Amino acid sequence: MLNFRAMNYAHVKERVAEIRGMISEAVSRGGHNQEVQIVAVTKTHGIEAVEAAWEAGLEICGENRVQEALSKISAVSVPVRWHLIGHLQRNKVEALDHFALLHSLDSSRLADSINKYGVKRGHSIDCLVQVNTSGEESKGGFTLDELLPEADRLVSAAGVKIVGAMTMAPIDASEAVLRKTFSGARKAREILQAAGHPAVELSMGMSGDFAVAVEEGATLVRLGTSIFGVRE
Ligand SMILES: *Cc1c(COP(=O)(O)O)cnc(C)c1O
Picture 1 (cartoon, helix red, strand yellow):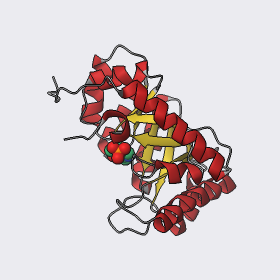
Picture 2 (tube, rainbow, N blue to C red):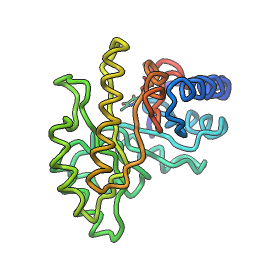
Picture 3 (cartoon, protein in one colour):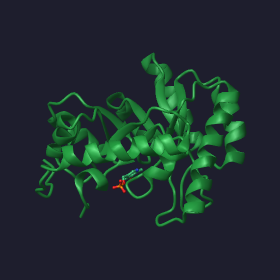
């Protein structure tokens, strides 16, 4: 079994209520009028965190590592949906059976592997294309220039269903950089839609920057620290 630090999740419900308030204010300020779903990022936390999230009304949990996710998925009894938000190795695409959505489709080679598996299993796999709109070298994903041909190429990939875009902002970014990063992801979604993909989702915003992300149109925010407290 995984050996997680014992934490106290008594405040999760309260925090989620506060966060929901912040999100609806940000939707009003941003004017995109979108619905926003919270992905409770439970990485490094035990199944108590998953249960606390569910009891607070959250229905989606996010994990960034396959192995850690799978042990929690098999151990929890609450019916949350799982999203994979971290990099996926091409030899682990079968793990996607356990996830409702992959946020981090970050290369053409991974897209090809997922497509092949989706075709083989007989129904397509829902994915967000990860885009690098911050300009940081260290961030994964497609630049908007790279996305243009990839969006066209993936239209014929029957095993992958591209339902939106995902991005990550640099840590401690200025508001100007946050806005550029998040509006860039909105642009990425437009590129995907123009190519013919059913791209409606925008996964962006973490604990430190979700208000700006929501103002810029986020439909999925990925929150760990702000819900569960600081990770060790
Ligand atoms: C850990 C993680 C998050 C959540 O980060 P917090 O700052 O704790 O909210 C969001 N997205 C990804 C991809 C992550 O790995």
